[in-house]
Length: 120
Image (cartoon, rainbow, N blue to C red; front, side):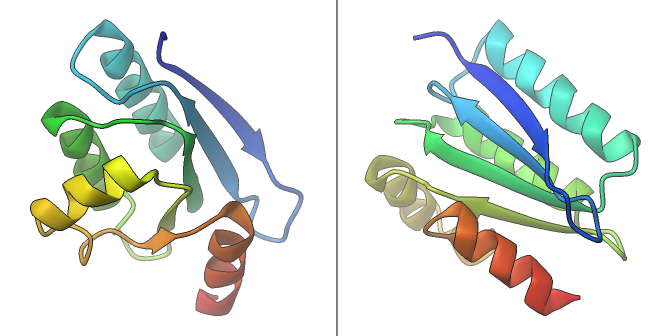
């Protein structure tokens, strides 16, 4: 399965962007494309980002690096990011690497939206 990413801007007061990943976050050209697209969202001024991993069955170390990098980009003042829908396999990777405490995780999109609204 090829890795793809779709974006959707929610009609809220902060124009929250949801980036939905479909496919495994693993090393390769597709991961570079997703990384480029996420960086472009940040550069355009996205202040609230939800990274929806519902369609992502697996993540390797390169994918984890992408998650950490985007989290760092969104850590600037006035910005917030949430990750939702991570599979059991992705959650296991985050636990093993002890990065689950560094990444804001939610079970689903609704929970991520609520967490972002509570933060503002």
